[in-house]
Length: 134
Length: 134
DNA sequence: CTAAACCTTCAAGTAGGCTTTAAAGTCAAG
DNA sequence: CTTGACTTTAAAGCCTACTTGAAGGTTTAG
Image (cartoon, rainbow over all chains, first blue to last red; front, side, top):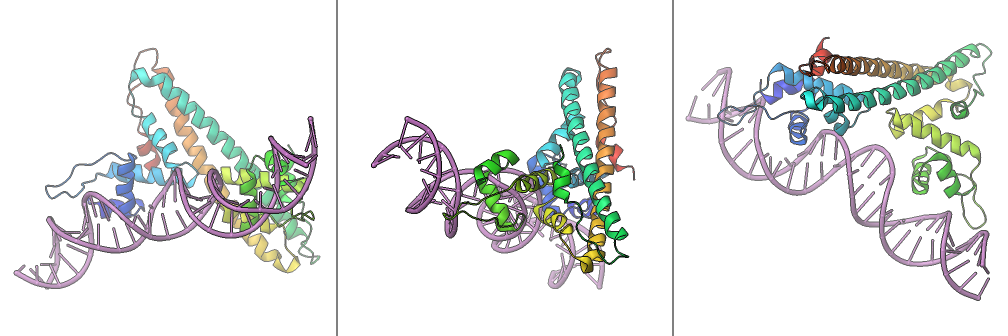
């Protein structure tokens, strides 16, 4: 596969794919004699993974670390475990925050809807105040 | 409260607070005769909310929208509901992705740990490949 | 009264993550 | 064998979200 194809399959622009290679997020791939990059489908997977990880709030550096986790030898095992555990706790926290925020929004919708009949959708408990109860 | 106090209570730099005011994320507050901004504690709440929302992956523009949701009149109700519902689905998706990624990492840790005794922590199923099963 | 620690505005600089541009080579179709 | 789509590199530009700097006014402790 040329870069254009891997790009369209992963939903990432060719220039961005090159940029990721430069950043070390994806390994350099073999080239044709004329210098064209040749990708396999694992490249598509990796790119998709990068995209998703990014959408859920990881920086390219975070993602780099995540991707490094699975490429290690026995000696590196404890460190891998530590890093992974730490990522897990970050993720867990993030999930909790998102869940809280979702509850707030659900409440907002519920209240909004409930009072719609009376023509008054006002004065919801302030999201911000809710959030501050800690 | 002066800007420095509200800043330290919310964990956001004074300059950033001003920047948020400029961006419309927080409303302009009253000033003293000499021009100092005077904040109440709701400002702290709002700033904390902004910070958290940001940490879980919302852009300042997203956050602006979120904050606008609760400040509306009866007429705006349907739109508010629609926006909130949409945000909820975004959040739900994000939670799902995070959950999947957490499972992957947990598996990684488990495998790593399990094989630690045998001195071989190798060849975990590729995170990327896992993720690509769609 | 003065020095340190605040505050003000405005403008410019920085970092992360791309995107665009330029100048040139390559490949596939007709 | 040429035209158009695709690829290459390097460098510059752009957007978001801040951060820093300059130049100056204010407040508070001693």
